[in-house]
Image (tube, rainbow over all chains, first blue to last red):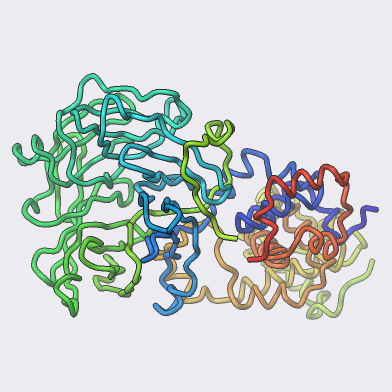
Length: 367
Length: 186
């Protein structure tokens, strides 16, 4: 019987307003409550809204090679961060004796999807919340033996999730989730950027790391995900230092330490004319260890906060408030910070629908 | 017509209101009258803001036939508390937060405000907030109800909210198998 003052009196809008606030696992459980709740919680618009409201987390790789997510928040004491990390998956393949066959390092994270490497030439796209995964089109044994992932993005005109790769025989390839075969890009530079982790801004990927052509010209490499054209563009004026690119307020920015205590942020004020201007400078306390002082990775925290670090040398992550001009917090994550932002999503994707290939190594999830 | 005297001498307030019009009078489905700050009502409710702007506010009590007196009392109470509450420092400095989710955490007084409500009153308030276009109150009440669902099994949720299971045994088993891992405890 429908009575006032019960959950039955609510219209579907109000009910979905309640359910959209639940964590992913609770949403999945709600599908078993009744048919109406299942209909609401499987609706595309509901799932998109749910994903848009999940808190942002950062992926970390633990000493045992599992992938976890650390909440990105200002408030909790550093000690709390450690306790609140959530185990996502263990993508590392091991043989019978537990010896590591191949490390499943997360290479990219976008819209709740992870790209994992499951071998020198095998990439997998995975949603740790729905526990679905699928192999991306293979580039080996032909035409390449070694494949390097350059960037993962949503191709907005087609709605396809795509991995841009570079093969050891030279040449760039696009691996679309759900496609059967890789596609070679006709007009592309011969060499790849030294490191992955491009900064995406305006549908364009930007790499600040060494790339022969770009470095020779004193520039950096950029790739338009829609037109599939590469070009070289002006670097920010911090050439010789480790530097991190990120998007802030819709603009491409670069972060670098100039010396031990001066953090500088440049912004590409006018994208077309490639004019960089100094955006912020913050004097920071020198960290205890020299390893902790560099910045080669940065992510935005919304507002005026950025998270900076140099994961190759240090597990320390510093939260820098650009407005207040100070470091708000330092966190030793113990695990390797990937500077990949992850937020849960239950949005369904057609490419997950086909059955899982038997040739794939198992990805273990928590139970 | 009955005037709710418990709500700060509503009759008196109404006389003052009619003089300088800084409050509006709302009438519940069961005919009770409530005074609410015009400024707060316009700020917190898109529906009331539209009525105030459109001049469709009745000085003798604007009829809100869809809302019972208990829910309306809570709505008015919330508006008046909100009008008096000084935005907390936490809210002002929250521009820096990694939780970019648009759902703002309820403030301490809002938490207390919904914590004292019964289940029934809470659902009535969600309905009223929904009807009056009160986004913030909807946020606070929906947050409270979702907190009550977190970590519960489907059986427990059905029990707490008195929901009928309309699945067949086979259908339920299929869902359980599809999402087996989601049914383990956290």
